[in-house]
Amino acid sequence: MVTGPADPGCVPSEGTGPLTASDTGAARGPTSCRAREVLQRVGDKWSMYAIDLLGQGTMRFTELHRAIDGITARMLTVTLRGLERDGIVTRTIHPVIPPRVEYALTPMGRTLLDTIGKLVTWADSHLPEIEAARAAYDAQHRLAQHRLPEHPAE
Image (tube, rainbow, N blue to C red; front, top):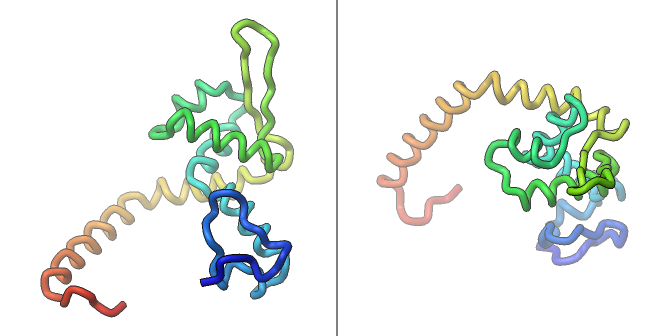
């Protein structure tokens, strides 16, 4: 395992963990590491939900929080800050009491809507098949665990 980047321009962001040999960008050029970092952000499940919802229009934090099932307020804050940092989302604070904060997609963020919308639609339309495949896999591997030695080769 590589503990630092082979390419000095390929430094992981905070919290991304140690680099592996495939993370150095050597395989596809110097920008692949930075592109991977952006893909990690927009490909995150919470980011996808937020982008998809903001595609319907500007929303307040509480609206987003209620609409994204299972996300904590802290995770939504982290997600929105990351999307704002990457130029995908804008945050507008209205000077009223209490302050009203609204989030919207930037023009660049709107370019993600087709791709993310297709992924969300695909996931929704294949849920029964995925659940059936998971159940079959889990059942098969539960049986196999009882028959295999403690450390099976993969």
